[in-house]
Length: 226
Image (cartoon, rainbow, N blue to C red):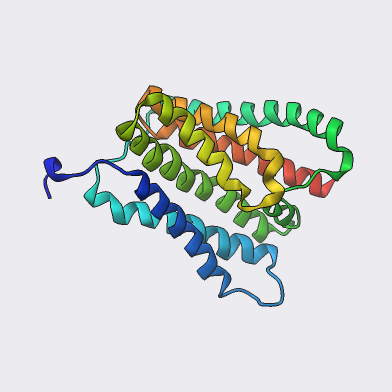
């Protein structure tokens, strides 16, 4: 297939990739304990299953589509600091607001509760790999790669910018307890989309996402051990 025959990414591609990831998590869940899923099983099976299937789906569709801008530049490493700063700043603001309005009754994401229990060296490594590295790569390929490119081709930059950020935030509501994180994730999604649009690469948003998630992982373990 020549470059001229390659088709642009479609919104339907993003839907297929998303459901491939969901199917990967379901299939992985079928192989774990039926007596209750442990923290190790979540981060050793479910998270890799979901994120791995997401990445695989992109790889499978890619030969028929225009090349995604999966490129890195040395200056993209600054994204790690940007992501860390975003996490710290938004966590501070949202923490104050959540405490003000919900007190101690605020719901927490199920995956955060699972990560909090992961105190062994093996479990910590799995959480860092899954939440800190695999999730940012898979989610950026989906939302700032496939979906953003599809929206750009189908509509315009404004729709791509707001739409990809909104989708990124909303899909986290598959865990209803994540509802209070939606505003934060929407803001992060806007930052990541702007980086992808301005640089024409996925490198910076991927590393920004990594920095954002790793600070969250560190905070979870610090809280759990204090």
